[in-house]
Image (cartoon, rainbow, N blue to C red; front, side, top):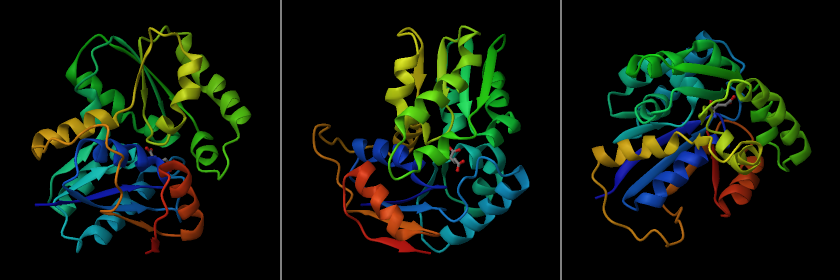
Length: 258
Ligand code: DGL
């Protein structure tokens, strides 16, 4: 039996969650929605994000999903209640999933300005454990840089130094990549940090939770990922998105405009 799974993000950030999912199982059919018309989400206010979340639910409503993977931290932070209540299916989110597995005391978080402003990460992590030091840093320019057809490595290096400086002053033990786009530049961020600082991509915790809920069939981990059962939808710019799918996932795929 195949499980029908919805994944959404403002753009390519959800690829980190999609890949993590397909690495662990082949019994899923995925509908991936990228709201490219409204990207970036991370500089919109909370009520705009809540409005968008309702529209995302309306779009998924007739897709007969078995579960929704919320591949966008910004929507997760501002509108989890809407996503959970409107679709009436199991929803798996990044922020609650990762918060359950963090065990360090001094925690740095890189996220979009809207996620930082919501303080949702702080709220969820502090509800699990006390006496923590949580330092959040908004990264207003990362998403637009990562979404460019050709990455400007010099600029991303410059921005990484800029955004990490406040966190490094606080001697963080762990860094959470609190926007699903950021794991796509993991290697650049890794180079800037001491080896003993753990970098966490929340998608691993989300997929682990998902796999506990829908028990996993064993698949061989060295098999190439197959995107045969993935359909991609965008709200604008299907041509450009197809270039990004080719670059990041190394596949040619039809991209449908919603
Ligand atoms: N990738 C999303 C997130 O995790 C949205 C980023 C954006 O569109 O600003 O927050």
